[in-house]
Image 1 (cartoon, rainbow, N blue to C red):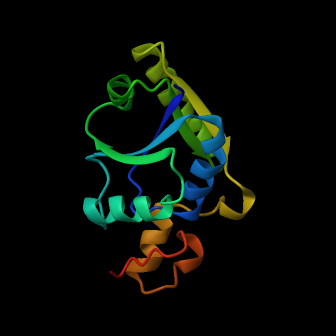
Image 2 (image 1 turned 90 degrees about the vertical axis):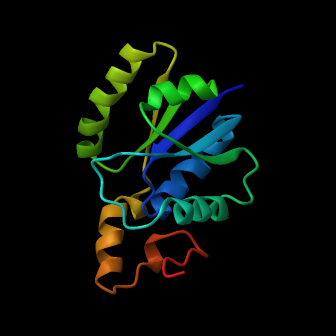
Image 3 (image 1 turned 30 degrees about the vertical axis):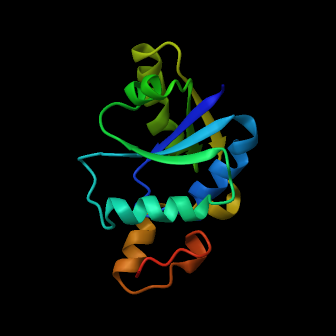
Length: 153
């Protein structure tokens, strides 16, 4: 079974995340949207809400699951018998950031391949960080998050 882990904080999930997962879904038997515990990031939304939003976003996608994990992504891959880490790239800056992580992951677990998808152009400016800032200041974030997600509830 070809299983991919799509790791992130998803604080909140964006249309960019949704697009990457849906475009990758036909390529894998299963994709696990994995909410990692990254202590260096400040969370705006609690874990239960983020899980709920991801489940709602992919409710009609039978090969997409949501899970949480702590520790290294490559260790989570081993636990889940996943041989792929799925990442979206918005820009060359994302690639510069992701490349050494992918290489280190490969050093830590030779059975794991990083799989990069280029973000669709209409989503390339969207990041969870920017969406959080817009939300904190009362701006309209509905164009940037999956349909049916209400961050105020």
